[in-house]
Amino acid sequence: MARPREFDEIEALDSAVETFRDKGYEAASLMDLLKAMDLSKSSLYNSFGTKHELFLAAIDHYAKKSADRLSQRLSSSFSPREGIRKALEGIVDDIMESGDRRGCLLHNSAIEVLPQDPEAAQHIERGVNRMKDVFTQTVRDGQRRGEIMGERDPEEIASYLTMSQMGLRSVGRVTNERRQLDQMVDCVMKAV
Image (cartoon, rainbow, N blue to C red):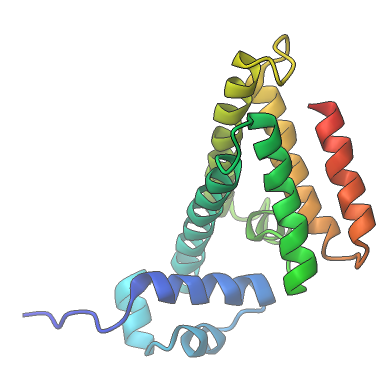
C-alpha cells in the first residue's frame, strides 16, 4: 500500500511558481525547487516528475490562478468596462504596493524557453488563451450593454487586453513610476 502524500500539492506548486518567477526555468536548480517546496527529491519526482514536468505544471497552475484572479477582478464591478479598468489598475497596484517586479510567468517563460521547447510553448499558449477567454466574456457583455465598441470582434479586443495585461507586468519590471503605468492603463481603455 502506497503512503499518502504528506504535503499540500497546491502549496508546493505555488512555491514552484515563485521559484520559476524569481529565477527562470534554466537558473532554478533542483535544489532551489526542493528547498522552496519543502520536498524530498523522491516526493518531487513521485508527485510531479522531472524538473521540466514540474515547470509545465507550474505554468498551468499559474495560468489557472491568474485567470481566476482576473475573473474576480473583472466581475467586481457592475460595469464590464469598469471591470476591465479595475483589473488593469489591480496589476498596477500589485506592482507598486508589493514591489513585485518579476513580471508574468507566462511572458517570462515564453521569452526564456521558446522556440526550443515546443511542449512549454503549448502550455504557455493555453495559459494565454485562458486569460483571453476571460476577457472575451467581459468584452461580449460590455458590447451587449453598449459600453464597448460593438463593431469590433470581441476576441480581437480580448487579445489586445491580454497583451496589454502582460505588457503592464513587463513594464512594471523596469519602472518605479506609477504615473507611467497609470497612463498605460488610460491608453488601453481609450482603445477599448
